Length: 197
Image (cartoon, rainbow, N blue to C red):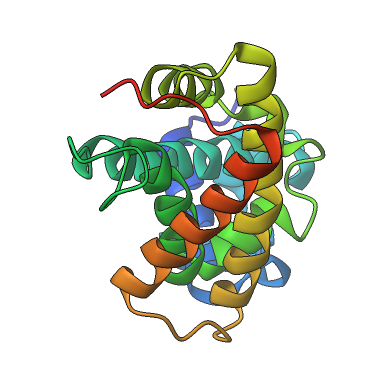
C-alpha cells in the first residue's frame, strides 16, 4: 500500500522558505525542512522527487514574494508630483527592490546572488508595467524606456547588494534622492523627455 501524504506540499514549501529566510541557502536540506515541519524527511520525498525539485519550488515562491513586495511599493508610493520631483512610481520600483534586499536578505541572495534564478529578467512579471510607467510618466519611447530601465537596474542591483550585506546606511528619503539623482543623470544621457503629468 502506498504511503499517504499527511503533510501538504504547500506546507513543505512554506517550511523551506522559512528555513531560507532564517538561515540562508546553505541551510536548505531535507533534515532542516523536516525539523521545521516537526516530522521525518519522508513527507518531503513523497511530495518532491529530490531537493532540486523542492529548491525550484522555493525559487518560484521567492519570486512571488519579491514580486508582491515590489508591486506594493510601486503602487503605494504613487505620487502626482513632477517628473523629477518628490517620488514617481518608477523611483518606487527601485526603492522597493532595495528595501526587499534589506528586509529579506536571504531571499534576495537566493534570487540574485546564489543562483536561485539564472536569468532575473526571465521572471520579472512587472517588467511590462515598469516600462509602461516610464513611457507614461516621462514620454520615452519603448526602446529608450527599456534601455533606461536596464541602466537603472544596474544601479539598483548595486544598492540592493549593499543593503543585503548591511553596508547601505541611508534613510528612505536619502535612498529616494539617490534614485532621483541617478535617474536625472540617465535622463540627461538618453535625452530629457517631456513630463507627461
